[in-house]
Image (cartoon, rainbow, N blue to C red; front, side, top):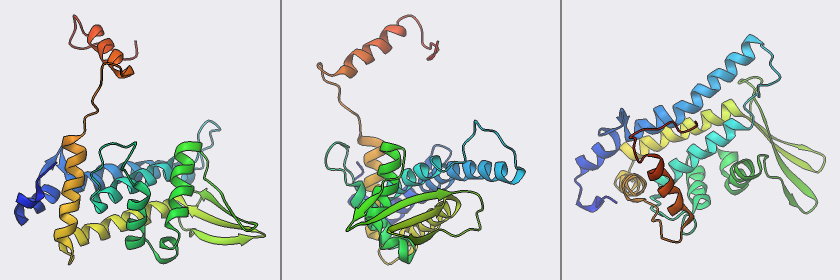
Length: 242
């Protein structure tokens, strides 16, 4: 992990906004690669809807887009919090990181439900492939997603004893994109930029440079590494899926 305290202000700024990370800078990797992938997917969905093409084997993105958005949200929130936890089985607090980011950068009504938002969308879709529902004193809170028209606003609505959080996936992405841009402004020009830059660098460098999973002699991964070495015994490259 980087010794941020030993870096000058210019070095900190350059690490985030100027130094190459692949073919872009680190922050542009977030906006142009991480968010860019989601934007590409949304453009495909929109083209599919506009052209009116029908194919029963194709989905509408209701499942995939929220998964992609919450994955990006988790990563950016980790940078914002300065989370350097390397062991994802302990000491990593994605919920707390995301709560802080949502409360600081999301619009009013959504920032009042960060835990339901995160647990219902991210944990529900990532682990169960359906949004998680909640029950409280005879009332239900449920999520639903739609893609039919990007102009239709996401909303909270009540139907009987159920509170529905209805989300337009196009707007969900736009909210995340705006939040990331607002975060960039604070990181680059805000009154707490020194603190935020330190957190960004510590978190990013812990991911980029420090994390290697050690494999013990008793680990099942040991056999798999030996399998890789075996198939490469007389070759420098072999097909993966043959």
